[in-house]
Amino acid sequence: MTLSQRQIATFAAAVLFFGMTAISPSKADDMKRTVTVSASASVEVDPDAASITSGVVSEAATAREALDANTKSMSNLIDGLKAAGITDKDIQTSNFSIHPRHEHNPKDGGPPKLVGYSVNNSVNVLVRDLPKLGEILDLMVSLGANQMQGMNFIVTNAETLKDDARREAIANAQRRAKLYATAAGAKVGDVVRISEDVSSEEGGPRPMFRAAKMASAVPVAPGQETLEARVTVTWELD
Image (cartoon, rainbow, N blue to C red; front, top):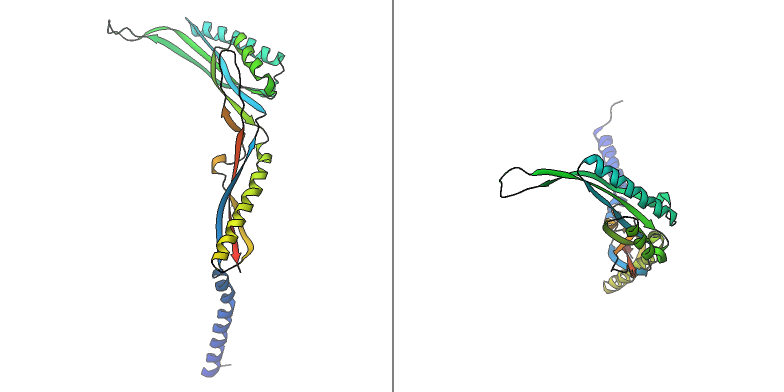
């Protein structure tokens, strides 16, 4: 059957009309007015644990002698920490290295002279009983630790405690969105999108740290940690 020119024109018009009605809602969605607000909030919390990085450096004429001396000292240190109540899971080796030691005499102009070897073995120790922190520091030195690389206070449940800051950040964002909408003669509608800035968390929750202060008597001052949440929220405008 052959279509007439009039039938062809009518069919084409119908196809055009259908296509226009199909894309109209999408265009309407694109034209919706929105307001996007970024806001933050924070909470102050007390640390409940501490991480210590410490160890033993041993020197001797040969690598074997340095290693044997270091192994004995580190075994004594770890055994003593366990006896003080630190569990296996809270003691982790963080560094082990053996290096030759050289001396250079600028007067003779010759090459550096090998004078021995140095062995460095360090561990991270998690102290969960914070009131015992000063005692543990004293113990580590008494057990032979001759290198202290650092100490940090930790909020172990920081992710849960941060929820209060998240709720407050959302409330702050909503308050500002209403202010902007009212100033523009509109009203805040439904939430379109919520995102949290986790750039400072390196891809996931982590403990929060602060450096500790130490002196000869090993006093410690945990202070407080600030847990901050940052959010960005988009609302429709009515």
